[in-house]
Image (cartoon, rainbow, N blue to C red):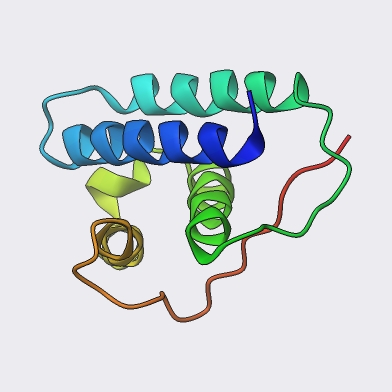
Length: 109
């Protein structure tokens, strides 16, 4: 699987997971597990370049890092965090602009 297709697929999936956690139709532990699974799949691609190839990929990695750092449960308890994450989701859907302070780098082995 090429990197662009991986990002496209995972962007769609993470949007659905985050939205479901925010709407409380999915337990936050499912989002945490999705991120762990995504990181495991990423390692199979053996990527050595840490620079994202698009703004969408940069925002994707920013989301992954932020949720990994704060935990998906923060989406239910931290309104500022939820707002930051929602801004990223709006960017994915074309309803918003590139998020301020978005620092997303590819993880490399």
